[in-house]
Amino acid sequence: MYRPSPHFGAVYVFIHPRGLRVSNSHKVAKTERRVSHIVAHFFMEEYLGNEDLLDRYLVAFFASREYSEEVAQRAVQWAEEICQTDKVVISGFHSPLEKEVLRILLEHKHPVVVALGRALYKRVPPNLQQAFDEGRLLFVSFRSYSRHSSKSSEIRNWKAAGLADEVYFTPFDRTSLLSTLHFTFEKYSKTPVHIL
Image 1 (tube, rainbow, N blue to C red):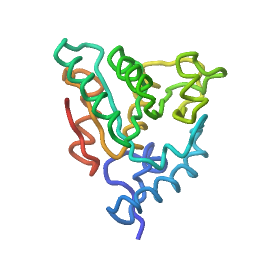
Image 2 (image 1 turned 180 degrees about the vertical axis):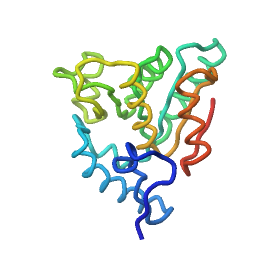
Image 3 (image 1 turned 90 degrees about the horizontal axis):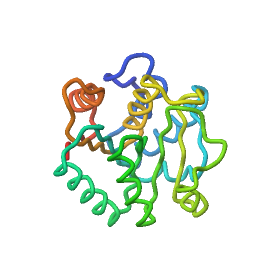
């Protein structure tokens, strides 16, 4: 029997990929995710690129804008380890450390899902063109605005985390928007959450 996710408000319940629950099995979760993607089209989610990446094991990555050299090294090591797996990384790749992780993933020809808090690009950015052409990249747009804003970035992160099978954070300050995201997923979601 389907039931709404208990851990998000109404704005997320209907479009959250884990909003419908049948079983805890990974295979069923993937089916639920596909159904949710169909529903999500009614809520302005748009895709550009290889949508099959959404059926893979997705790992979300979020990094604070403020970080130490030690945290940067841990993030780089994590990215290199991910490149040895079949996992697909989803992120906004917006903060400096997220951009560095993206650079490593692209360098290793690892597939990525770029979550946007704005409308889809009219042209694929040059640094992402090869990955896009080779089917190793998907853009997911969660907002129809032409530019990022603080609010749209927040929504982007929540939606990206909602698509993921596992979520990773770098350390963050308690006042960071990532703090609320981390707390909510750790306390109310069945999605595994880690801090590097």
